[in-house]
Image (cartoon, rainbow, N blue to C red):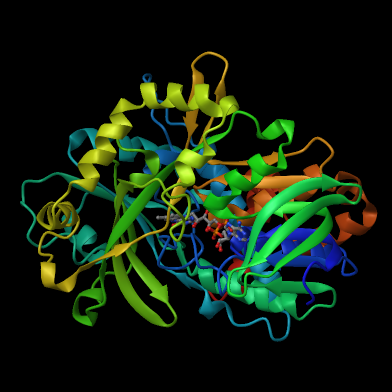
Amino acid sequence: MAQNETQTVDVMLVGAGIMSATLAVLLKELDPSLTLEIAELRETGAVESSNPWNNAGTGHAGLCELNYTPDSADGKIDITKALHINTQFEVSKQLWAYLCQKEGFGAPRNFINQVPHISFVRGEKDIDFLKRRYEVLRQHHAFESMVFTEDKETLAKWMPLTMPGRNPDEKVAATYCDNGTDVNFGAITQMMLNYVSTLDGTLVTYNQKVYEIERCAEGWRIGIKHTGTGEHREVKARFVFLGAGGGALPLLQMSDIPESKGFGGFPVSGMWLRCDNPEVVQHHQAKVYSQAEVGAPPMSVPHLDTRVVDGQTSLLFGPFAGFSTKFLRHGSFLDLPLSVRFNNLKPMLAVAKDNMDLTRYLIKEVMQSPEERLQALRKFYPQAKSEDWRLEVAGQRVQIIKKDPKKGGILQFGTELVSSQDGSIAALLGASPGASVAVSVMLNLLERCFNERYQSNEWRSKLAEIFPARESALKEDAELYREISTATSKTLQLI
Ligand SMILES: Cc1cc2nc3c(=O)[nH]c(=O)nc-3n(C[C@H](O)[C@H](O)[C@H](O)COP(=O)(O)OP(=O)(O)OC[C@H]3O[C@@H](n4cnc5c(N)ncnc54)[C@H](O)[C@@H]3O)c2cc1C
């Protein structure tokens, strides 16, 4: 392409992670005539958080994550979040099942595998919580297959590595759901990118750094630099999605939309212990989640996971959190300082002041020695040997800092879709649970930014074909939930 040539597309998606890939697929299914470009900074897609070794690959469905079911002072357990994420994951499965039925898309085994989800706790207080949580959850059809036990023989069957070598007097308990999954989010991202790139009017470009975003008569003018050749080009787009993961905040700030004001980012880095020794790996087939340490952020809940990546099974333990000023794993140490603006200074200072526990926790995590990390692993796997495990760097999570009328600023651990009032630009900020609920988040974006078309008969009937049941229907209708979940699980070869 000649330098300075300006192209025009209907939709520009910045970043080739799971969010942009999902949105591109949905848009092209709903309107095949749309012209669209996905511009990615790196040489391929799914290199940042969506890369299988940068995330834990848990198909979050509220089956094992104890932080999704908060306890209250009166002993009541709130399952709203677990249920919401469960049904959102069902919606993700519906899109993936729909795509897998298309010729040439690829087999479900390439990206999703059935792996039981277990919540494992130690000590009377946590056992009491787990039991009460189980009693509430199992009454809902989304969790009806959940089983609870304190029986050590059953626990040893569920988690053969977890019981041997443990003090026989230690009180332990677990819940077990056999319908959990491990997802290679990098593979499904790449499959969606490959699929959309075969469609007319779609371009997926790599080594493209988006460095400028400005309003223009057509919508938005986007400045792009080729990271290899240094060549600059411009693209004009009616709609822009900033699906740049940790890189979305600086781009949103560049857009200068009023809705971007006050947002800041708090990057948390991570590390895993990884084991590829088949002698060890074969004895653990589950994702085992436990309680987070006091003061630890919710995304630091420790877990021992079966990971299936490119046909190979490994074990992953962690994450061990850390602090880095980079917004992307391949980013710059200047990312955080350069994101400070007059409009987000107050929220950022308020968060720094109010989150000393988190700061202390992160410092402690960063200072951990290899022996201390092994000790943490041994709480799950008492006979773990250091020679079987190696330390690997995980992806960056940029937590959201935003304005708060009372405190000045708050730290938010979920994700947030920020869009302009005219619906011509949107950005996804934040991290967790992220990839598992990408489809619901992108459907939400379509409803917000393409509302007229979203409500049209044409889009509604196509959406109904792809998604036979959405979140609220799945929550309320037990028969419908069972029927649709079973059908999608069959198509995805999970049962
Ligand atoms: C340690 C960890 C564990 C996690 N575990 C889970 C889990 O178990 N289950 C789950 O569901 N989710 C998990 N997540 C969250 C999940 O990985 C993310 O929510 C999801 O991958 C985000 O996808 P994305 O497309 O928004 O961003 P990314 O996958 O990060 O993609 C963003 C892309 O934008 C590109 N980019 C950035 N800036 C620019 C620019 N200026 N120009 C062009 N391109 C740019 C980047 O190179 C990157 O390829 C985890 C995340 C982490 C970090």
